[in-house]
Image 1 (cartoon, rainbow, N blue to C red):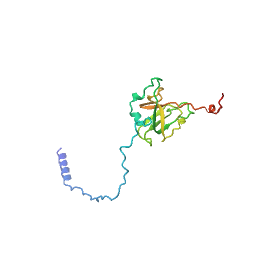
Image 2 (spheres, one colour):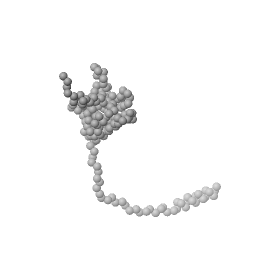
Image 3 (spheres, rainbow, N blue to C red):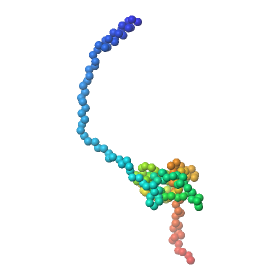
Image 4 (spheres, rainbow, N blue to C red):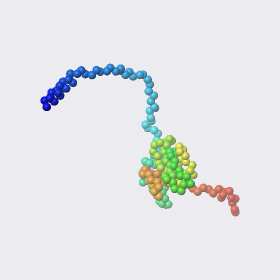
Amino acid sequence: MRVLFVLSVAALLTSACQSPPQTVERPKRVPTPGTATLPPVPNLNPPQAPERYPDGAWSVRGLVAADKAKLAVLDPVTHAPTSLQLRGTVASLHPCPLTEKVCRPAPYLELSDNKTGQGRRLLVAGERDLDARHFSVGTEVTVTGHFATASADGTYFAPDGLLLLDPLPPPADADASSKPETK
């Protein structure tokens, strides 16, 4: 045991007597002059669409911020949901070809207040044939429908709300207008 103690003390003394390692001189870094090209400062207060346009149409921002209970009221005479108009830019379009019997997912589009389609979006759905309305991404449209959080058949659901399109009126019969009137 004594031998082990003596050897450990000797190892400690020999390591303490050694000189410190040599420091290596490295060249100092000198910054090179130059210019930085930064992107433009973003506008943190972009213009917002009004809640409602002068003609009475809602904006996406206005419809999402509105009181949901007041929007989903029934007409007292017809007991049908009251229709409203919504104006926005088509941000995305998901049609369903008429050749398909069942569409998964069901056809819908999303409207945004921003011309680029960015920002807050609102789901617009309720009609299988979106091509008949001639929607295309990037165009500003005004649609008519009723506000809901879910469709009656459960196909569409959006907690913030969605607009279920009113059906298109039937096309005018071309044959009836070309026939001469009988007296």
